[in-house]
Image (cartoon, rainbow, N blue to C red; front, side, top):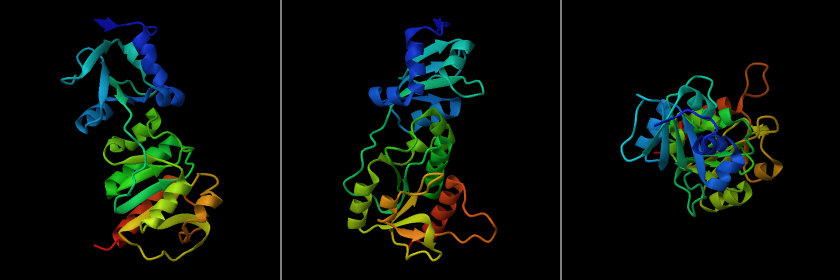
Length: 247
């Protein structure tokens, strides 16, 4: 049986996961696209249902719902046509009692889901230990953030927590906490095996409360630009920090 009606209850429930409030209430999120769905399944994500066009890929042990082209377009927010979408359980994002050694990337009120997803992807590629997202940042499990992360959201821990409390706990556990700041020094502090890098809001930077818990760093600029896109700055800093970490 192929679902051809956009008003079908299962289709409406899937579409509702485009909304952050619904994702929070249900503990579910929507994955869009062949590669992302396949990567989520292979990474061990708890995928409940896969919506697929007839003839597209299916997954053993996961409920398959066949839909028409029009219904698939209605489920997905992506501009390009998709063959697969899926509903998955959102992983536990509670902060750990003890943070893992390595680089933890901390996002303070980051608003653009594209930037957030790109930072998660870069953190995964460079071998970061995890990403901590403030509750007032964009949702890392929104469709746009997941697309930007290209599957990396399922490859490394993504935590959500109040930054003041978590940064204090990190410091107690021996973390060196660094944030980008226009009033910072152009000399990086000594990098240790436990380092937290804080990336601030795209327009306002890190909050004063967060900055007070960090060593402030201003990246030297040789040109006339005063700042960089958050995701670009994060990538450059992650590379620098990881390359500077002691063995």
